[in-house]
Image (cartoon, rainbow, N blue to C red):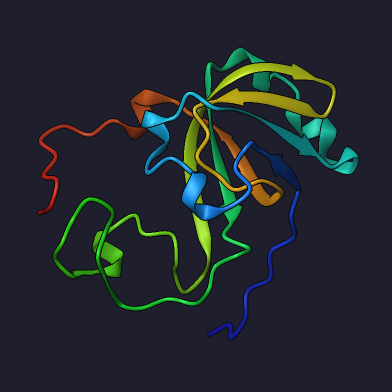
Length: 142
């Protein structure tokens, strides 16, 4: 089994949130606008992205301060298992957010509904397709 996995950022996410306390608890509560600067060497990979209204951002929690396996989620007073939450401090520091794509100009994407810290490295971008993501009879934990 592979002992280490390496990721390389494909760009940087710029947002109005300079520190963790400023960020919305979840992206669906956010009205904030942000920009994703995709590095020029990946720009051609953005072809046709503007045909989607929402995109998925996969990014690195680059300012994470470690993690605990039991955490108190936002707006909760009970300890929960880390993997049963969306808590940001995780073993592999990977975050995922769905945002509305407002525009694309060359290698710059402008998005709305962002909940990410300023200058966060973006690892990948995928189109959001509801038919692929929507599940029926979903049970939502605690």
